Picture 1 (tube, rainbow, N blue to C red):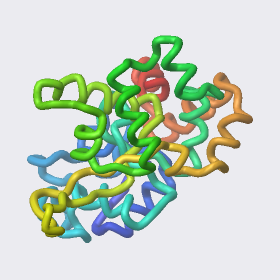
Picture 2: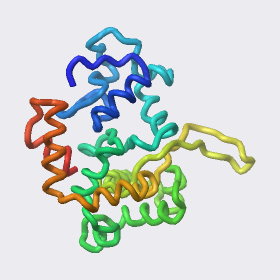
Picture 3: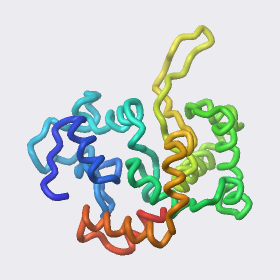
Picture 4: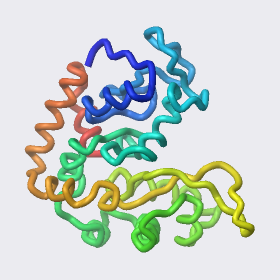
Length: 235
């Protein structure tokens, strides 16, 4: 998709829906990013879009949560190269068919695909439907000393498409007052996407999904390398 020019949030969403997938940050990782410049880089074209200004119309950092607050046809999570990225509803079934197939969480856990740390996280979210990050740590029994294990397990669950981000929430004091920074909220991918997406995924063969996604990625970036495409698709 050459000559993309983004000047506001609505244009970003329009391009993202057409692209279907995108890295979340300015580094396209050899695949594709709707916003192709990073925090400290100068945009390649004239645009009011700038990182970390706090403006919901022109700050890509704000867009990632705005998308989750306002839509359910675009997901945002750590799904590519263990980094953040976007997937639209049209393309979600392809990734699910490849990374999960028709397997349930318990099957992947029993087969050693999912760690015990990830199981603890998944089960408390499944029990509560949605949970902010600080509550997940508390309910799943993770202390400060478990930070690295917790972080790895949370990325593991996102990469395997069992969990996804679904918004943000501030902490609330005992007096009922909000305080501190907003905390990312997570839910299962089933709750986020709904039955339709998983039914489509169940009807796909993994090989056909890989072939279709590969063709689509090359339409976004004709010079993407095969090994990068494979890793982007399979996780």
